[in-house]
Image (tube, rainbow, N blue to C red; front, side, top):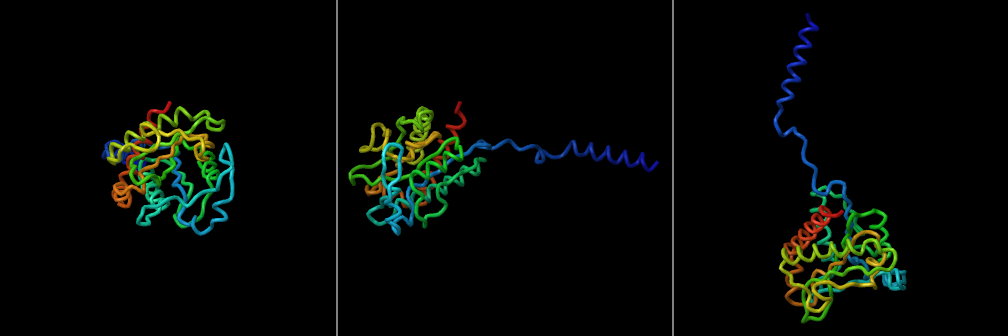
Length: 250
């Protein structure tokens, strides 16, 4: 008798469980679940403090060049390293919400390095599905706008040239649409500049581009880039471009 009552209670509980609210239903997978995204915020805030390390030569895939540089700054002294890092951290937050695993080449803005070859190694070893190098340019004051720097085949990067260019096109379109920053009127052509002198692009084995978000020496660009609202918008455009690229990647 007791056993029969127990079986009846268990059956009732199972029946009730089959009518639980939709809140307990399986949640849909996030758009970037299972994806690895690499972010390289160019330079570092502490590079100024150790010129001997920053200036020592490393192999960039074609020749030797300095380990890194300090980067540029606005006329008011706002550094490129700080801008790059802020945008990178906003981008990281967006990507994590979308379910991605994010690999950063640096996690603070008060260190030194890593060198440009090491940055490429970090993202290659992580087997990133896509990666982005975040920079801001120090061009002529009369020039302004965004440029996407793309890799040129040189051996290690041969298999990701086409995919990098496709990511670059998606990124340029989304960035200009969302931020309102125009295509560069002094760097590259139509917003793109193939480069064979940058370790991050020469040594990459994952799809990657370098974005020069603005010209820090241009008054109009400089006035916007220091604003957190602009930095968040720039990061949002990058996140949307990354998601768009990975959704359509074959």
